[in-house]
Structures are given as C-alpha cells and as structure tokens.
Image (cartoon, rainbow, N blue to C red; front, side, top):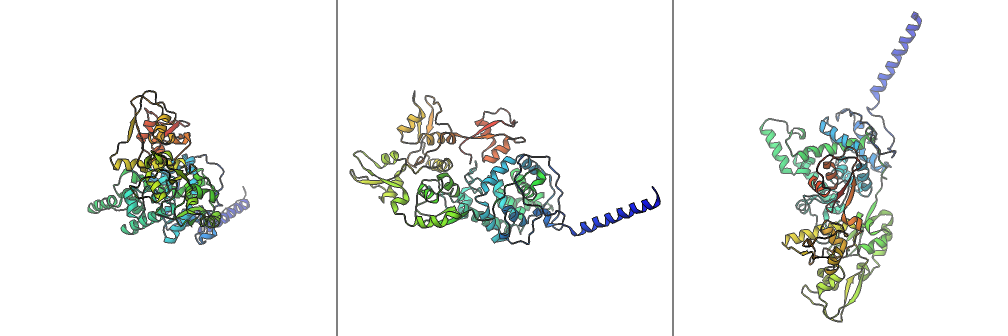
Length: 535
C-alpha cells in the first residue's frame, strides 16, 4: 500500500471515530424503541442486562419512552407505565434469577397481563395521582398474577393479596355477601394507602416498604435494628429477611426490567389501550348480579370478573351500592338500573307456602338460606311462614360462576369452623354424590367442590362428606362440572413445583398431594391438577 492510500485510510478512520464519539456524547444510552407488538411468546436466549445507576440514564430504565409526555399522550398503557418508573435499579444475582424465570415462562406473563387488561388503567391512574413509582402497578403480577379470585393458604385474597386482619385495618369490609379485599377499587385504595404508610415509616426507602408489604413491617424493623446494632448497612440487600421476601423484591424489580425491555428476553406484550376499561355506576340499592349482567350486555362471569368482591347471587344489601361495568355501556346501564322496581332488581318470584313448610325447608328448596328469605320478605329473625301466604324466593337464574362459587364456599367454610360446627354426612352403601346432594337440598357441583372431588366421583361406604346447611354455602349456586372439580395446568419448560404452586397460590405440598407426585422434578407437557383453593 502506497503512502497516499495509507494516509487516506487513516483520515477516514479518524473521521469515523470522531463521528462515533460525538454520537455517544449526545445520544441516550438506549434509543427510543417502537411500542412492542405481539409477535410470539416463545422464549429465546437471555441477553445479559447491563445495570445502570439512576444518574446514568432514566431512558435505560423506562425503555426509551419520553417521560416528558403527559399520561394521556400515550396510546399504549405499557409506555405510560415505563415513563413512570422510579425504583432504583440494582445489580444482583437474585434479580437475574427471576429474569431468567420470566423469560422462560412467557405463558405465565401472557395470562397475567391478559387479566390485567381490565384493571391496570385504574391502578396506574391511582399511582400517578399519588406520585408513586409505576413499578408498583406490576406488584399484582407478583402477588396474584392479576387474578382477583386468587386465594392463598394464609387466607390472603384479591389482586393485592390482603389477609383478613390487614384488610380490616385498611377498612376493607368483609362479610357473607362481600369481600372488599377483592374489590378492584377498594383493594387498590387500601394497597396504596398501606404502601405509602410503609414508605413513610422507612424514610422513603421503597425497597424496604415493598419488603414490608410482603412480610410485615415488624419483620423489616427488626432486621434493620439488628444491622444497626452490628454496624452493618440497613438497605434491603443487606438485611436478613424471610426467604420469600428476599425473592419478592427481586421479582418486582425483574418484572420492571421485563416491561421496560421485553425484547431483550424474547418477549412481547399485547398493547393495552391507555383508556379506562370500566366505569363505576351507583346502583342505589341491592341488585341481582344476573339482572345487572343482562342490562350491561355481559355474561354473568364477565360481570363477576369486574366485581369479584360480590360472591353471592346479589350485591350486599347493606352496600356498597355500586358496580363496575365496561366504560362504553356505563351510561345506558345507569339509565336502566334506576327504572327497575324492587322485585325486578332482585330477580325474585312468588312461592305459595304449603302445610309443613318451614323457613329451612323453603330455603333448601330454592337453594338459598333462611337469612336471605327473611331479608327478601322483611320477616323478623324468628318469624314463621304462614300457610297460604306468598313469599318471595330467588329465581333459578341467579346462578354463580365457578370462581364466585369457590369464593362463597371459602367464606362458608370459615363460618362453619368459627362456630365449631361439624356438619358432615356419612356415606351409606350404594349412595352417590348426586343422591346425597338431592337428599340435603344442595347443588351436586357445590357439594363436590366443598369436598375437593368431581361430581361423578365414586363414594366409599363410611366416607365422610362436609355439607353446608345453615350458613347458606350452597345458596343459588351451579357450576360447570369441569370447572367445579379442578383446574388443569400444563407444565412449561423450566417450571418447578414451586413456580406452579406460586401461580395458583397454593402450597407445594398440596400440588404434590393432588397429583400423587413422588418426585419434585416436572416434565414439560405434564398435566397437573390444581384443586379448589386455586384462583
């Protein structure tokens, strides 16, 4: 190569280097990316994450979206969430382990965000109004996989997994008709109140607040005090906390990374429109959920998904008096509801009392409870039925979807235990589940559900079955046979018994017992039975 060619080559290299340096000095670490499109949910090789500090570039944390835009300017709710990320990023192996699991289980994320479509806009809006980090909108993925009917062995319930005591502490009403822990609006209010209180308690340290949300503030306070006494750092990463909590915070941080840069992990998500899915409508008084669903143009199951706090055939007679319905039908629904009379609201019909009828017998005949009959007919607590009189009874169309049935059965089971009632029957030779259900005036599917079996199960002579009576566990309930007995889970690559149990909020021991597993290793494609405590 002659000298002239060599000089020209060197000049070109120097020019290219200067251009590159100039670009690096002015461009963000991560260039803005187009909104994610759902191409596939199949995992690919994980790209190592380069951790950046808060001072380096907010764009690297938020996935390149412009944080200067107003919330209403985004078309995709995921972009709006990314722009509101505020939690400090950290370089820890615990986060990488959770990232690997998320990347290897796209179906889990697909199911979770598929359910989140209904609720996420409301949660994001409430977080923004309080100036809280929008990573917290992803906490229900970790808590419940956005399943409002999720119920854990520790009796935690709802999107935000409140246990009964903490729910009461944050004014979440819980009674025979209604459980505010599953109310989308009320539980979100309570969860954000709790998280804000924890953040204040731990001097603005969000990671400690999130850890305390999982294991309780006393556990975190004690861990901080121990480290202070030993002269050790008191940040989350240096505290000795329960194993579940040590994984809990990394799960949320890993979920933030996945949402910020799904393409890095071979993932993509359907866009969620940045607009409200539901509207809150004042019903003014009690109403049958079946009637409300018909007016709203929904199936009963669809209405219960928006209003999972109501686990009976009607809303709570003492309130709250509102329902959530799709935003585009809210005005028509509001107009129709106010025109209903009392009988139309409750979807009741008349029954003529015959000789020998008692409150309990009539209640059993119409799959309800004596308490409900008294409320419908404005009868005193110990009032009797008069032969020849007409009483109001619930219509046969007031049926509960499977998830609501499970929620009702859980409530009734707790009521029985609290009263130390042992309402059981002993199976006689030749008896079937259907015959026993018919004899006691209960729904065969509900009876099967309460005893963790299918309606077609063969009974053994001498077998004991739990059966609800006075508490009305089987009031107006009917479910599909397939749904009543169990849920079938297909094992995906990389899943363990722990991951499956976590998704359905049951214990590893329960999954192993239901499936008679003698070893803990699972095989992709394996079918697992998840019984009634799931969802």
